Image 1 (cartoon, helix red, strand yellow):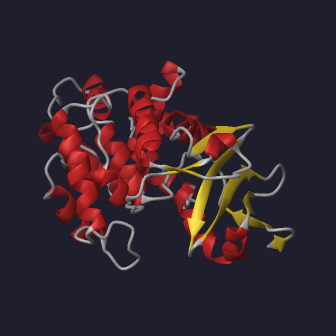
Image 2 (cartoon, rainbow, N blue to C red):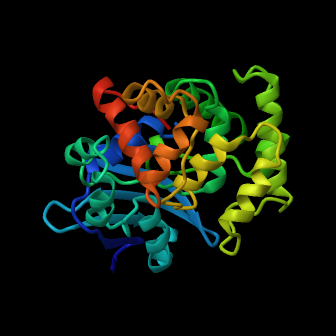
Length: 305
């Protein structure tokens, strides 16, 4: 680590292969307007840690097997502590050869592993942000969800005065702010607005300790599923990305279900598909990423998730 004028630089190693372009494509297609951006081959967002704020920018090292994280502003003093959450966002602890070998034993997945051997499961800076995104994204396209998330930030977020990067100059709404803001004409059905604000209230009150270091994924799954408007798809998607559950599987995801039934027309419903997808344990989250990625590659755009 090096620090100069409130800029700290971390080199965070990974195991090869590592598919940085597809990871950036995934983040770029879902970037929250004003809060995070993908540009010039880097991921960037405003961050806060232990009362200090600043900007995180992450890019791939041109020669070494590592990502380079630049942390600007007062938050740079926490660079050592930030190494762990950054590594989680970019799935740097994955063992791609081990995962790839296990999944490539399945003839359905073998060509997908060959096409994208270093595919990672993209993480998230904040579990709260990710659940908000997942609720907003229910039954709408990725693009539509991004538009609505941008409106939420404008309505309930906080603009960062004097922030050096215009594309990341907003703080994502806090649970308190999102729970109480007027969301009329935001572009979502009333039931989904109620679900979103009910979830925000549950996090604000501490009933659902989503980003607590001590909360375990099993109890969080139960607590989230108990909230109105949050179903198994949302919980498994969050488990994949925020809780780093390598075996999470959003069984009701339409793209995944279609990908499976296209390979075997007798497997149409999620219950019928389960025996087939259980063969991918304990790496089902990576299998999901490969199936989503196949569709994204074919469409030339961010699809799935």
